[in-house]
Amino acid sequence: MKLFYLKNLIIKKGFYFILALTFSLAGSSIYYYFQAKQVKEEQIALSSRLTSLTSDFEKIKNEDQVKRNEILSDEIKNIQSTYQKSSNIYEKLLDYQGKDIKVKTLYANAIFDLSKKNYASASAKLVEIEKILSSEQIKIAAEFKIPANVPENNTAPSSGYAKQSVKTDIGTFLVDIISADLGSTRVIVDSASDSDCSNDCPVLSLSDYVSRNGAFAGVNGSYFCPADYPSCADKKNSYDTLIMNKNKKYINSDNNVYSKVPAVIFLEGSVRFVGQSLEWGRDTSVNGVLANYPLLLSGGNIAFGGGSDPKQGSKGSRSFVGTKGSTIYIGVVHNATVAEVAHVLKALGIDYALNLDSGGSTALWSGSYKVGPGRNIPSAILFVHK
Image (tube, rainbow, N blue to C red; front, side, top):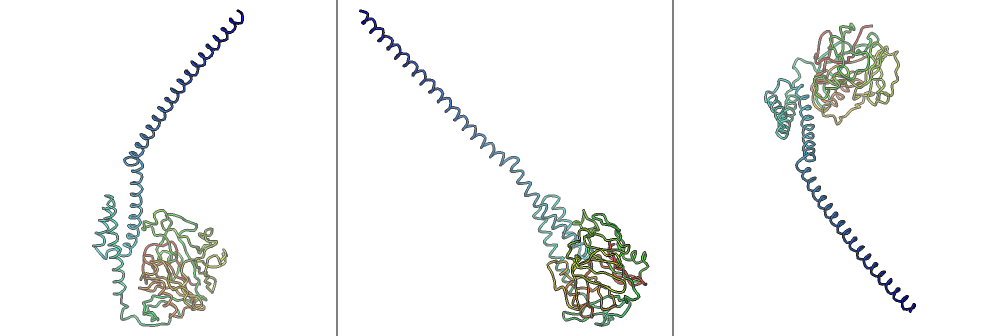
């Protein structure tokens, strides 16, 4: 009897265990079913949100800041390009002022187009102006005539001033030239500033330099950035090359320690030319130092045959300083490229020569202006009696 009771008890407990296990498994299945369903729904929701965000981003790209920034970037490029072209044309116009009303009208219209953001139209007008200026320059050079009363002479004057035509292997050129003996002449460099200057630098006329030094002759000095050039807006009348002025002050010394720009050194009774400024120290016992480029003649041989600078390759009035033995020369060769000046000075028998600034800065003085006056300048080479 006890055995039967025990057997039934075991059967009942097994039944309840199986029943509990069944309910437990069913509950777990239901739980995991709903968990999986929730995860799937969340995945669908996230996918939908991602699609929505992607769509919103595309709209922003096409309709808002991204597209606007791209348009702005293109506009900035157009502004930079047309402004640079406009600036270059304006600087050329300064040398051709008053010679062509059509050019002035076109330029005014181009500026108006720029103000209206019509970049293509402005650019087209600027291209047309550049063609006209180039054609005008060629025309002026072709029409240039040496006055009939100017003598042809391939010998530089032994002293004083002369206007003469010089015949070379590449043509005949008009030259204004001043010579002086280094035994009786002190050559100095004068500058409007007595120290380094990077912007709004002082300038003087060549006649002012002559007057304040009691000089009998002078010529404009080194290249500089004219105040009326748009590209010089933040460096008006400044220059980067080396100078030692009459006050024994070296200007632009620090940034010319390794300079490859040629220089001329005026000593007492002699002149020295160096192919690179770095070859010269900072000796203050000399009368003056001026660096510029290019070196035209060295040892009687042509040192410059042409370069990549279009300004040096165009026809114009070119200033120079040169020597032969104990004689020093300053002057201007007219209607010539820089390379042609080297041929002219070689034909005159000069041994060493350095190119100086030219264009609107060209000025030569011997008792009065022989060429110029040109614009005011930051430096000048002067002849003073000892």
